[in-house]
Length: 108
Image (cartoon, rainbow, N blue to C red; front, side, top):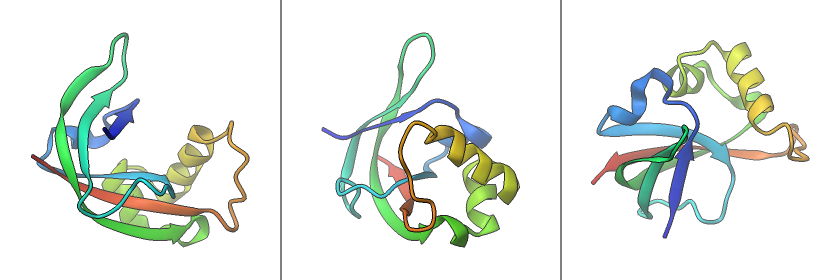
């Protein structure tokens, strides 16, 4: 069972029938994979639904375009990259070589 957990509902995107998420490359993310639980963290995790991965774009950190930052969070590219560094601050990431996924999901 695949779960996607969010700490913040940027742009209220999790209420939309199609939304994106920006994540570290992971072997479990594949087009057509079903996400059985979309959860948002709070005092308690809240179930928001199920979805299917419909598209994945691979990119390196320096290649993140403005459209990813705006669509995913509503932030400009500088603030978006700062947010990504904050989110993954406890991981040993080589930002020159790490592959990131911009994943699009469609609710079921």
